[in-house]
Amino acid sequence: MLRKMKKIYHLSTCDTCKRILKELQPLDGVVLQDIKTEAMTTEQLEQMHKLAGSYEALFSKRARLYKEMGLKEKQPSEAELKDLILEHYTFLKRPVIIVNDQIFVGNSKKVVEAAKDALHN
Image 1 (cartoon, rainbow, N blue to C red):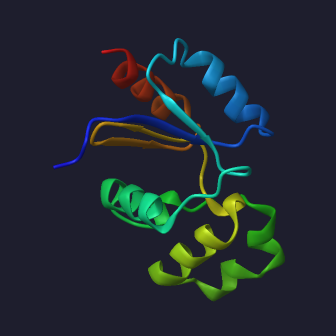
Image 2 (tube, rainbow, N blue to C red; image 1 turned 30 degrees about the vertical axis):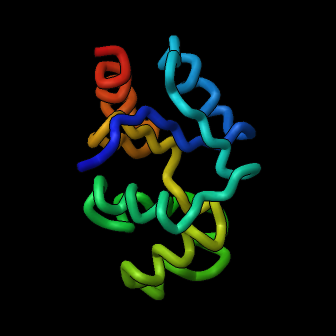
Image 3 (cartoon, rainbow, N blue to C red; image 1 turned 135 degrees about the horizontal axis):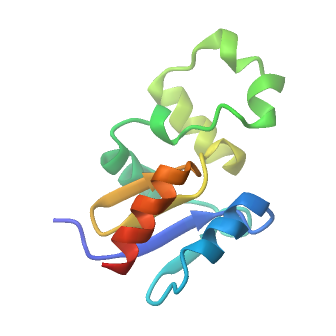
């Protein structure tokens, strides 16, 4: 049984995250976690994984480090993706919005609209 919660993992320095947070207003009862200043715990990431179904769904291939580390050629396993996300927040596809037992990952218009509906209904 997942507890009732509304939480957004974001990066306060990211313009896209700022725009989406503004779009999702009002954020009554929503916990915001800036993953740069408050690192995600293993438990938090595992909860996201449970909802998203894979670490790949949570992993950002747009991160600059992804190219720098040559990860495209390496095809990291799920376990390696988990470690990479925990190691460096930049690998989390942002924002991650959790509304009870639903998860919304990333910044596509469709995802943001669905998250907005879930947050306000």
